[in-house]
Image (cartoon, rainbow, N blue to C red):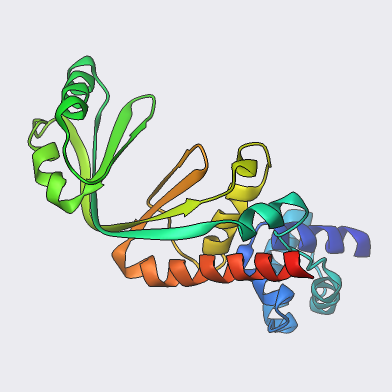
Length: 222
């Protein structure tokens, strides 16, 4: 049973970035984490579980969640950041009509920034705020699914190695997830990783990514 409890606790910790961060940085209250996990462990094992057993399992849990390993470290260390504020987005139904409107807009677009994310049924256009009104007016109200302003983009420019080094983009995403920063939209364009988020989160996101890059640069020097 003890082995089952340890394995179950480890699984729950592996699924929770907040718990991983607390344990790895050694500021976690093991008893508090055990109280959170106890009902989940009992439900998973379908039996009553002693609190002390869960506390012991938390203390013994693997806490090495270092996302900077091997070639990933070099790519992250060689990356730099660029921020664009005053951004907006509009999502529309993907139809022949809306795609044709987007094509025509691209042919004449003179704004500073425009990115398009095309899904199976939805197309999202991300632009600078000055171009936003111009873009939204090409669509009818029933074509528009959602629109949002007060956004920012963080553009991460990385070395060419990012194109064949798996895990690099995930390292950036994990850096934001650990700070509970919500990503509105994201895309990759060759060596650039573009992350769209609310303006209110941009300073916190920039700090998180800067911290990640600094750690990677420190590791490459050692």
